Length: 446
Image 1: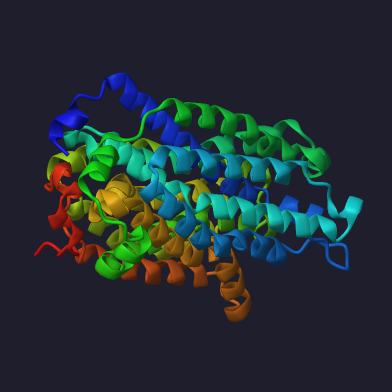
Image 2 (image 1 turned 180 degrees about the vertical axis):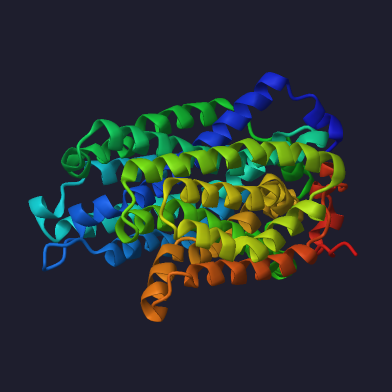
């Protein structure tokens, strides 16, 4: 690809590409965040125990189920995304995610249809997880491949910003619903409303994606590369070390994300007795800090590089701050909970600004969808979707409410090692991503 190919893309088309890619990511994380926020309510509706009390452990187990299907989805969507193109593959993914999320909001409760209710809930979440397996890798590739040469990190940062924006919007909706509705109304039907909203959002996203052309880099790479080897086989053989680095880098970020947006809400409400309205407000403030800082760090990374200090700084900060953050959280007051959310956002945001683009730039264009999707799905499935279940089980097994802090510090240490071995990609021209030279495994920068 010549650099002129990307340079000649009109600014209006770039903006449409950002919106088209981001809206699918928004739907994906909006649903996952909502499930975490309303975990206690979902437990009441779908997982009552024999004593009439909801099973939070069963609810978190159902939360984890789609992450088993996610890697399978990444294999399927990654293959077709690298063979046929990003646009069509991403259009199918957004239909699956929005449709499954809508079904969750429309499902009858356990009181209405008995055991069928939790079974159908699990099926819907498996469908959502399978479709989500093709979203992050493809949407990130879409953003980076439409980006100007000197703004690749900023464009890629919208992937991470959208995740937190989805959490922010979900927190706003949760705050409003818990404020204007009684607890009985919220638990009976109010929690369903935001889930139902995802279907019209999915239709809008489908329309926007189908209106755009394929990315310039993908079209040029398809013309230059005549190989017929399956993208997955190629990336597994030639880029397995890069995939391991990406997985290691993602461990901390995905643990943090699901900890603050899936585990903390239920823990604060059920274990510490915090009112839902205060919990949602504290989360809203913390996530707002993350949304604001992520693109700001990305703009700076476009000037000085991805790896130093951004990819390394966040996991090191989290190793140091995990225990203080949890000590604040366990105080159970509105002020200390807000402080915990904000402190975690300050520590994690330098990495989130650069993460998506750094991951994308590891892989050549012709295998980028497959490489990113598989690595991301494996990391999120193991260290993301199972985080609430792992943390709940740790507390029960150890009897210590501080055990999640030590778990977070441990994952951050792994990511710090991975970040230190991660090659600098900020000075690598996008043009080289489509050349044969880039088919060799990347070598970490000294």
